[in-house]
Image 1: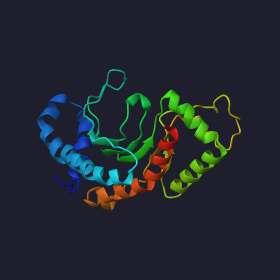
Image 2: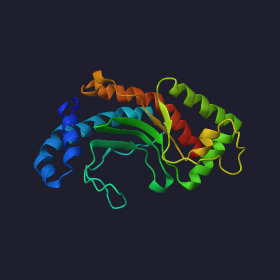
Image 3: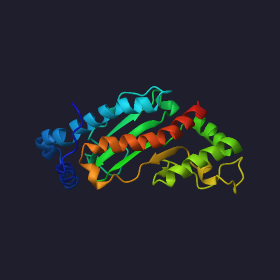
Length: 224
């Protein structure tokens, strides 16, 4: 199934689901969810996988993974049973404990998001990452690449960051912000309205991935 775009009714569906958060209601409307959210998302990431494989020639990518609509509420105060969007990831091959990056993560619904990178590194890779940042040669190169992306509207983010520069590094280090982070993820610019519900969304995501792939591949090479 080739990707032909998402219906605008997708957002209306998720807004209604956000208000309902009712299992019985969702059971009745599950077919609608599959038609306007799940199947188009699968078509989108299946199409993108081939393009991203060419962008990451040095690395092996996993098959696209679609996330379940059901929330894991076991350790959350929010017991709402459903997510308010559909999401998928195309990740690098590797063991979970090694923290392989995502070539692409996309979430579309009440809120839209797309990005890529190493959002959360395990302890061993965090140590290597900090050496990468602290080294004058590689640290400056990393900062240069990140600055070039932020000028284009990308944002640097991570799931976790320290409040202070970690021990062993000067508090006034010129890349203190990067040293505090436990990973480097890159969020894409906001998806333009003119492509959000168009087949052009696939090309837009592929183009943004092409801009971030050199950085993510460079980091992964230096952390391996």
